[in-house]
Image (cartoon, rainbow, N blue to C red):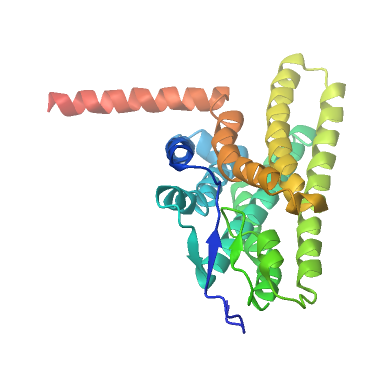
Length: 319
């Protein structure tokens, strides 16, 4: 992806969160702990699914383990750079590094949108077509679905990133944010901007609205099916799963829509930064707790893994 243009700006300055050294230190400690916990949670889920024979063959947990890997990549795309700027608050990032972060961050975000739709599809098939579910969603179909999410995610923002990178940046190179986001980038680009803002907005709106529509439609059908179900135990368990999936979807799309779908969001820098912090750092921490670590099957798998580990250590000590 070539990022050369006629710009005279070779680097950008991210103002970050503002405030004094004490605020920077507290934010540094908070986000460092949050980042480490997020990695630990998602590594735990991936390990459990890989090592537990039961979970490793269930499409829902194959999707969730890959979603955990996506969350680790997603949070790593922004938080380490944010921690570096908090530790040394200069906020200088090169032109190429800025657009590389822009592309990777938004591609991972688009991949997450497709993953949320894939998991909604999986729950729809499992609950609304339980007898045909093993034939419709075997393991190889699940991996094809996962691969498609990654490919679509990394192709989706390629055109907008290339168009914005070709703009001329000849004026101020300072913007009030902590990540290379298209809103601040477009605000410091020199006119004429051409079709870049329109194309970016079309791609973003289509991505968010189409996936939200698919997720809402899928879970609506699922809920209506569960209401008609006569099996109370299965219905309660399925309702619980669907509820927590909807919580994740609402948290993610609520914060993203507040930044990218509401036009005034670009001008409200503090509100925009708060929402960006939420979906870049907070939601990757919350998602494993909501999706998996409260799940009975995951708790049972964790118990089996701890027993095997304890048994292994006991054998090693005897040697």
